[in-house]
Structure formats: C-alpha cells, structure tokens
Image 1 (tube, rainbow, N blue to C red):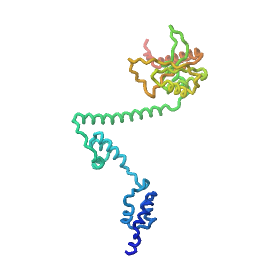
Image 2 (image 1 turned 180 degrees about the vertical axis):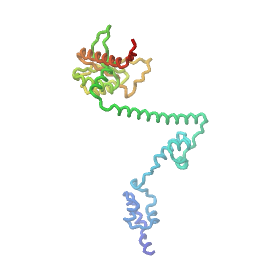
Image 3 (image 1 turned 45 degrees about the vertical axis):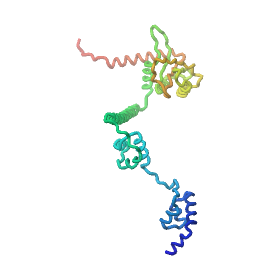
Image 4 (image 1 turned 90 degrees about the horizontal axis):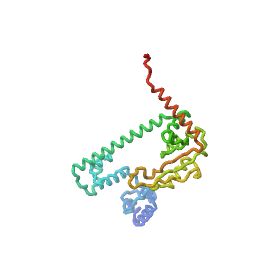
Length: 293
C-alpha cells in the first residue's frame, strides 16, 4: 500500500504530464498506459476539467433524432405528433425537449386541420411513389426500338408538332417546334434515320424576354450538339403583364425551332407516310361485312 502511495507522491507533476498528454490528443487508456496509472480515481483527478479529444467521442445514433425533435417542438408540435413523425418513445422526447417552452394550445379545429394536412401529405407521398413505379415499369417495357418503330414514331410526332401544307397556304417545308428536350432528341434521331445531314438543319430559339435567354441558347446548343453558327437570331416574345404565365423558373428554356433546308421532298414523304398510316388504321378498324346481299 505504501508503494502505491509513493507512486503518486508527486501528484502535481503527474497531473501536468497527464494534462499535456490529454491536450496532445491521447485517450484515457493511452494516458493510463503511458503514465502507468492503474487507479481510475487517481486518473480521474489527474484529468479533471480536461475534455476528451473529438476522436474519442462515440457517435450517438439518436443525435439527429434529438435535434429534429427539438426543432419540431419549437414549431409547436405535441409529443404525440413528434412520436408519430420520428417513431421514438414519448419518454425520450420528454427528455430531449423538457427545457423548451410548452407550445400554445391550439383549438380543436386547428388541430384537426393539422392532422388532416399530415394525412394528406402522407397520401400524396404514397401516390407519388405509385406514379413513379408505374412510369418506371412502362419505360422498361419499351426496350429497344426498331428502325420501323422509330420511323413511324417520327412521322406521327412531326404531324402533331410540325408545320403542314394547306390548300390555301402552300408551304412544303419541314419545320418542327417543341419545348421538350426528350421530344427534340427523338426527332433528331428520326432525321438521322432518314439520312438528313445535320448540316441541313437550322435552329431558332423562341423564348420570353423575362427568361434567361443566354442560358436557354446555351442549353439548346449543347442538347443538339450544334455550333452556334447553325442558330438563327433568337426570337424574343414580349411579356403581356395581363397574362399569368406558368412556364417560368430555372427549367423554362423556351422552344426550339428546327428547320430542314431544301425540305420540300422530305415534307412530301412525311405527308405520304402519314396518309398511309391513317389508311392502315382505317382498314383495321373498318366494320366487318355481315355477308348479307
């Protein structure tokens, strides 16, 4: 016993060494082994007031939950609401937020509205998940497109979105307008299939004056992989203050117009193909003869 006391006789000197080691980033175990201090009480006294280094702190899995619980409590949530949101016990919640002020009591009508809003948000999340799952399954079913499938897709796409010749307005040219990058991508793949050289294409951006015009021009040029020399001067649409536009924000990039130079022959092929498709469908859907004379 006398040996143990003599071992720690120079307590202040030992403490100075222990504190220096602690501030150098050593753990309790490392300090104990370095100084040969086997008595935990003595070690506690040597390190009194010295915080442990960050690397020795064990991560607490509930730290994030505790922070979120406190945030919700400050927003006026009840214990029940926090429990439903975070899935933890009321006793834990009480321990985490007991120093925070109690939320003001809401009238039953407001509580019902909050509960209804929560249920509706949950329902919307489920619907969105189902929506995304259906879209993913449908995309998977498409697989690889054959040249014939792409050809007929392109014809229908052009006839829906491209300019058309009229008896009162003869204009056998191929001009296509759309704002959807995916549609533009499919249309260009269709032109490639038809053997239309990219050098024959001219592009024009159409966009409202209140949008990011320069950003839109850059976006479309990158999408079609064309030099800016292939782009005509951008068409700027004047903003009507009486009109409430919904196509705004960072995702709004206007429309892209794609014109095929010397495209009269191509136009006739497109119109003829479309006519053939309509006639083919008509034969499929025509009523079957009863055989009566």
